[in-house]
Figure: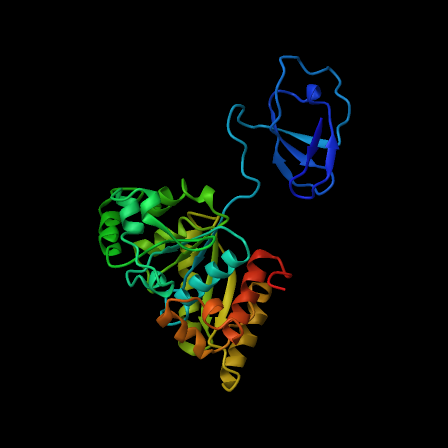
Length: 323
């Protein structure tokens, strides 16, 4: 029979009778990608010495289960304990940019201000709190804000969620992880926006995400806050080694301010490849939320839109996006 790789479209001629019954995935020898193997099964045992096949068979670790996804969902937390550095702006526009690139994205707002939904021009009837408490099922708590982009809103109700977490005798730090993990299979990326400060919700985010993106405005107080945040991250990593600072995003880059360029040079010397291309100061970024639009919708040709496209390219590792 002929099997076509869904990734590179290469056709492979194989004998289905020679495929062991526990094999449910195949790997294309052309592009190396795995894909589900869905073929009729016959009650004939495999030969003792099967002939070489043009596709490599991958045994199912859990026979009888559904095929595993080809790539795990990436969990990215946008966090810094200091406010005013562009966390929500970055969360919304990163999520929107990934969605424009064709990725399925869930944006989770863990800030009591609930600004993420405002910036996207949506008014959800519930969000993260209602999902965790069971007041709303996932299909009602999560709403679609754009093509490929869904949001789980924050807001004032998160204050009650904090109290709920505090009252737990044990496992409170896993509250958000327990709520989101069963849902993430439907998405390529989960982007989590956090509030300033250090509270139970921030700790919960750090016990859920695997990658951290830290926006740092190029000013002395933000740099100082970044240093304190790194100490807090180190304390979390003692219990959860999976969480890693992957991206440092300089924000509010103003070429007229000499000290800002000096700060940027110092950060790049210390952290190297973790430092993303800076987000330049751009008034369009502050104007877009008033219209319920992302920077890509409000001013697609602006510096802000160009810089966030660069950020999406770095996160995805796909330099040809948007070209």
